Image 1 (cartoon, rainbow, N blue to C red):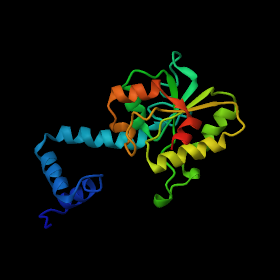
Image 2 (image 1 turned 135 degrees about the horizontal axis):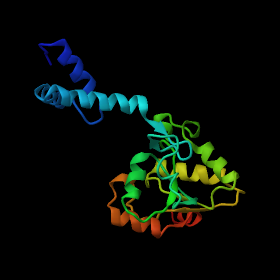
Image 3 (image 1 turned 120 degrees about the vertical axis):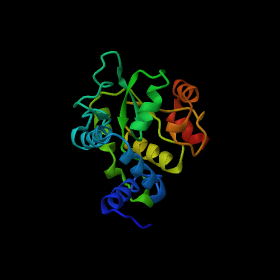
Image 4 (image 1 turned 30 degrees about the horizontal axis):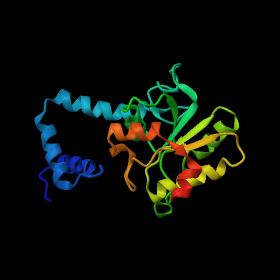
Length: 206
């Protein structure tokens, strides 16, 4: 792809690094931005800069936040003894949209995946285990996607909790095997949380 401007070429290259965006789409987006008022482009670049420089991770659940303790963890109406274990912020948003869950979350930051060189040490598993050891949690709900990596991560955490006084459950398999949580419709996801089953039962079923 030939460019008449090095500035345009650089912009297209950077945009094309985003997931799901090829060079042609990146060029279309870059040219669209050129047609917009300068202040609109400035607002976009400012929002992206703030995203990188100002964003924080909740010190309790590791969710993305503007402050040290996210709105969910600081809400006195939430059940602090009930913790839903999810992969990332998209899953938090999906579950919150159901309106069926009133506990807290723990964001792992991914799933155990040897193929992608992601091990337990790369996730926030240790801080989750510490919460349970400190007696802060009565029940953990495993809400990872029903993939091999999700099931592996669930089982690893379950083994780390052996001998500790905590109830473990998993969302009901209203979510099809292999599906990512964020793509489930709100009704199905909400029912899966309400109808969760003991984690031991899910292992027997599989």
